[in-house]
Image (tube, rainbow over all chains, first blue to last red; front, top):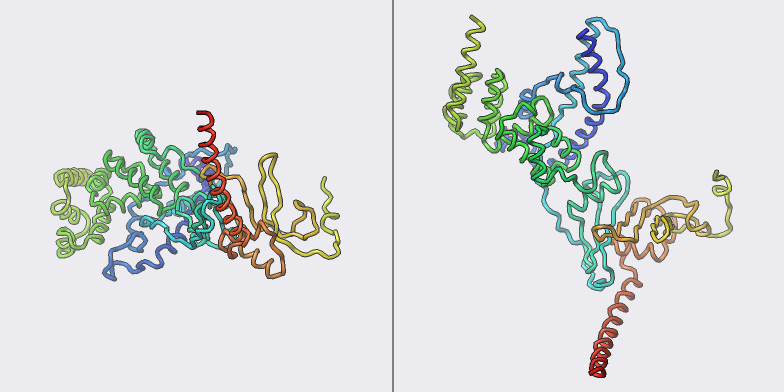
Length: 339
Length: 133
């Protein structure tokens, strides 16, 4: 009976995941184009490891986890009568595997990009046209096969200046002529700071991050600001489990590692007995900051697992006492369970 | 029901392809589509291809939105289409064509006349005050 219900859930909700995959595919194309001029090498080149490096991505996918029950939980959607299928155990296993693959696609991380630089290009200055018009003209190129980043959107000001449109104007105009599903012309008032606080009190961090992903471009200042506010709030309140097994977990981990505040997350992982994840988190930290004392000592001793965590707790963290307490508690529980 | 075959099969004597503005929208709310059409067709119906749009009413951000499909406009001009005056002016403002001479002429005319009327009206206002006093 339980097997039946799981299969029903999985089949019902896996169909709507195709949209998400397309969006993240486009975003990744975007990210690749943005980063093609930037460095493509990993830590082997001696440059700082980026979010999109293979090693970093592997570590982050492992930490994110794959909780099928959470991914395929009931979401608000159109009411459809459920379909029931009669399967053998083997068929059920295959169906679970297929659902796991679909879930992995759904967990594709949105790219983390640096903030986009403002556009200040002036194409022409025609003093002749000053004072003729009272409003701006916005000219868009609606040729079909150009990527949106390379599209010409040009503004003729009332004082005769012909300039390229700013990022805000570009987003609005592209939404008018090439509308994306779920995106609104003016950003919804949820993204104001006071309203975000209310959302955080209701523990709906994941929903607001999904909304932000749909509404803003990944390198816009609003997107980065919303994400940083959300991550700070989660870190303050210790609600890391809200984002575990979602696509936003990796971004949160990356942000915390960049700001050097992974202590809370480490304690949370140890308390939930996720020692492997904690070890890989510390490994990621050492990859990004190879000069810090704990990284050097870990390299000397070739430590891994709990040893690595203990070295990190001693050398680098601010909450040394808490981490060591949590480690001791974990070791006691493992001793008790083995004995 | 619209019978499409008379619209599609109409044969003309002479005429050429033009790129012009076809009017749409509602009362007191015009909206133009930039369209490649036969010059002898009605203004709004039976175009060959839509190449863009022009909204003459400024929006909440004080912008008049114009769109052009430059790729197809290049194709039709290559086929020998004639753009009309308003289309040429818009293309000039957008930077695709050089500025239309009438745009420059009208701008200079506007610059001359308000200065003349501006000098005239303060003088009349002063005389009016003196007369009242």
